Length: 259
Image 1 (cartoon, rainbow, N blue to C red):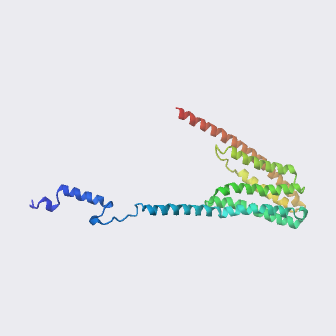
Image 2: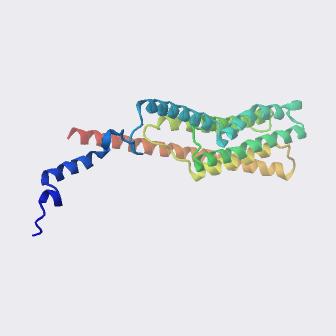
Image 3: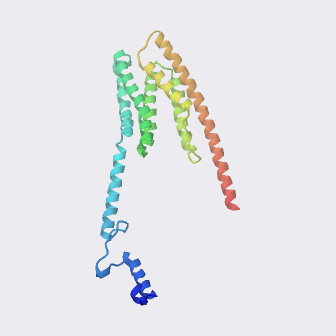
């Protein structure tokens, strides 16, 4: 026993409780009547809130506006602009001048190359936008359709070939929209090979080729037509399977909800 009163040594229990409460309340009040200092985690004042919200909206709008003009979308726009230029070059001087056909081939080749890169860039660097989703397939079909129609109009390619290729492309696009409620039909390797074969064959027909190269382009186009039909039928099969699966899953979910 030291004989020291409890109030001198550590204070009474009530005093300790008051001191503890005062320390715990340090976040809401400060000793000596001083205004509390706002910590980093506390919310800003009401005026700061308004400025932050306005700044956030302006920043989001700037990001959305800038995202439209990314590299992938610019390549898609370039491909759209090339379509009328390609047609003009293709039909210049009656459409049979080798020099003009060579320039038309150059425009077609640039369009095909940009078709490869814009989608890759959009997926790799997260540049996917609503504009790109709509404009990219339109640009693809526009340049291919323009080339096929010009070739058939000039008598270089039978109209039935143009009809098969364009009919398949438009039909599969419509089919994708019809089954989108059940899921997305992914692009297959056969579809990519079909696109490559079509681009190569049409490009060879755009050029004024003669001799063995003219014979070769016939067979390349034949391969492209076969791939067009086969992959089109495969997409139809996938759409049917996807629709059946989606209907079955919805029916199972409805039965589960009724239990």
